[in-house]
Length: 400
Ligand SMILES: *Cc1c(COP(=O)(O)O)cnc(C)c1O
Image (cartoon, rainbow, N blue to C red; front, side):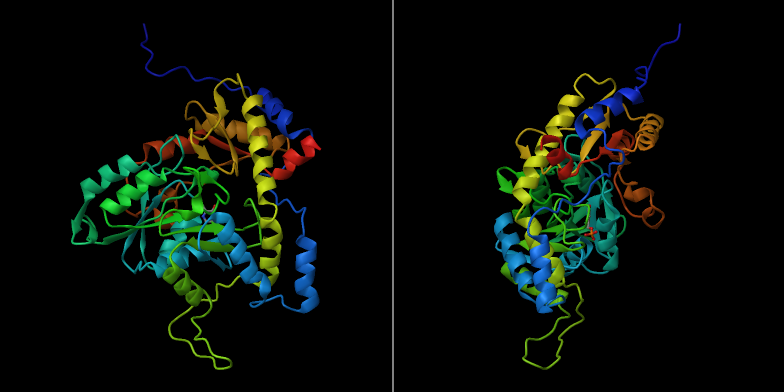
């Protein structure tokens, strides 16, 4: 008799999965993963920048958008940037990350998180995930640091590489808040700066507060696929006035204030968000509460449409979180790359714009030699996650 060591693989019925998705998104022929929803004063505000000629690097929409963002996120300062990647780069720079430093970040993230670290000549150091939130597993990170790091005064040193580990850069994956409190405790214990890649999590809440208020700073993105868009853009959110001032300076070519002279006191960056994009952003931000409601409803509809499905379910955030439901995920019960790819192919064939999660950072050629933890959970999640079409407009179309 053969002893069975693995549970028998469930063969997932792709037609059944497509029927369940159709129950939520309707019969439209081609459905993108995520599209902008433009239904407010976008035309009016953008037209104003065109009518007045204030389309570029100065103009009143920039500060109006920054003020509205800070208010919406419950932080005292928001500094807007040309992209979310630029926001991460400049926040790390302003917090003192230097060439040769290591920065801890998840392997399960979009490549921008690791790239921003690399721009500084710093080294990404990859962490494993937990399946409850898809974020960095804080306990396992602490164990890893006990293995490989020592504290020398206020510096956390990697015993194997000799490098200083300077910062912890978690990410709220697909909008689900990561375990911020437990990660903050690890950062404090190991004397690490805590900066959070919140690019996908605009509007998400943790412990009753907007995610923008955690860590030294949170960085967000307004790329076209995010919950609100400026075309392209980003921002750093922080309660630290000195840090905000420094980031503003660095992102505006480090120009010294003067009525006409071009004086600059260090190597700065042109990371400004143009006024025309800020106009779009302000109009989008005015609608975010509606988008959040629509996306929550869409998520609930996916959850009920997949009740009783065989071999997979819709990922749900743990109790006490209030993510922005940026992307909905079908989660295979058992990691199975063939099954995942079969479903991706079948849904694409049916005109449904599903996606796998990003290739894990430690598997990309430019990052394969970076320091890292063992990755059992991230590697399993890579074979389990399928992202579903999640635009807010899908819900408004269904309910209107
Ligand atoms: C979108 C995104 C960014 C920033 O992207 P930009 O396109 O530069 O605005 C950074 N990190 C993550 C995880 C993202 O999803």
